[in-house]
Length: 458
Ligand code: ARG
Image 1 (cartoon, rainbow, N blue to C red):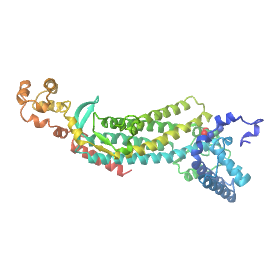
Image 2 (tube, protein in one colour):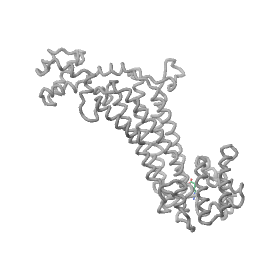
Image 3 (cartoon, protein in one colour):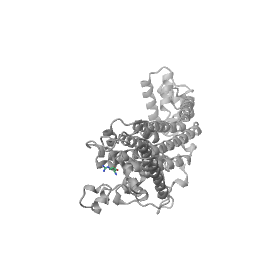
Image 4 (cartoon, helix red, strand yellow):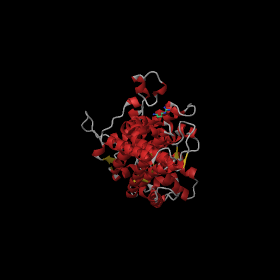
């Protein structure tokens, strides 16, 4: 017996039940389905479709179902297809015929739309909390590493010395934008779809404003057909989370590189590494590798939902049931990833010595040397050429810029004087940066302060 089989002469095949059903995964909407039904029941009472006693009995029944579910006493059945019909069936078994009145003035199409939005908002706020924790961790690490000097790279070739705090704050900025992007997803979707019915609205003068207040939405949807067929917010979210994972993947990649024997910039705490079943010496950075890898499925989820929506005529089509597993997967993957990544970061040890030593390889102070000549009145292009020749000399003679004799410098350009050595001192070059937003201590502290102010206001 189905809840909808009035016109059918035959039951569905068990294969159809398996293929068509969503209870296998939409049980995750359970809490929100109950919440939506309680609000709907109160609204029906308000407009006189249910008496106070009837509404109270329904609500009590729904609350009992919730309690029993968490006590493990309730089993959903594929026969009832999805969470909405399972709950309705269990309610009707529990309180009798009255249970059947609950579906007045609604359809599963607006019911699933509201459940999904409630699930979405709840979980998106949880994700935002975790992004905020991550931002706080990075901010603190940056403050602790204002004085740590390391090579900054372009093309993964040593480029110019920077502060580690500056490198970390570059990620802070990326995750800060992620926070705002994810938050904006809520802003765009905060419209109540319940009360839209199947697609055309319902034959009852429902109080959707009341539902909006009960379920804590910002506004009531203006077009029933749109509100049962749109899943824009899921696409926006999958997209925002894809960008978040792109950033998580980039920082993971750096952690993996920094952790290699060749770099030796960091040591990841044993609790966040694994060994090899064959090579006894191994301590592998599996966590950042997995984060990098999981980025693939997050991108996949974005493409999946975009493809499901493409080409759907209005309004509801069963294709829309395919919005769930990918969303649940992205939400769950994001929550666990942010949690472990935050812990991993907190348990990284920086090898400041190795980082600083590395600035001495690869002529990272060459640009400063060119700027030294600019200070003496030489055009930057000419200065660039002179320093290029000196670097070529250094490479041939295996000498750093600091190790080249003043007489040699003078043979390349008479403007060189003894003060050049001070100008190209690795620790000093970082503070020679004068531009706003640079790696100088002054600029870095300003950016940290501004970001602190921003995070305190969240
Ligand atoms: N399980 C369905 C889904 O997830 C609920 C809506 C069903 N609506 C319908 N007209 N068959 O989309």
